[in-house]
Image 1 (tube, rainbow, N blue to C red):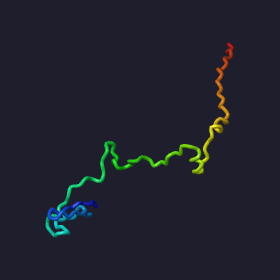
Image 2 (image 1 turned 90 degrees about the vertical axis):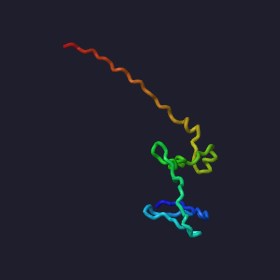
Image 3 (image 1 turned 135 degrees about the vertical axis):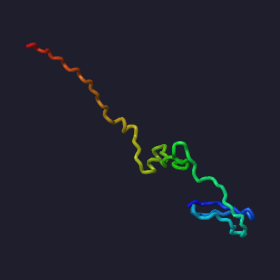
Length: 109
């Protein structure tokens, strides 16, 4: 159900009213009783973007925590940091060059 903004022209009383689309418009001011209570034109609660998503959806991006900048912050968080020395202890990967297939003489029979 939409929320409509009403304002009285006589006393200036303003009120937001939750109404069904099929409900009749209010005309009597609840503060002063005058029949000058009118519906106001208000802006929409969302904005459309060109790609089909609402501008208010996914505005901040994914919520990822900031990465700690040093090992002490990692240690405080209980995370073991990988040391550069540990990275250099891995064995290098050997690459082999494929040998061309030997051509055997074809015997003519």
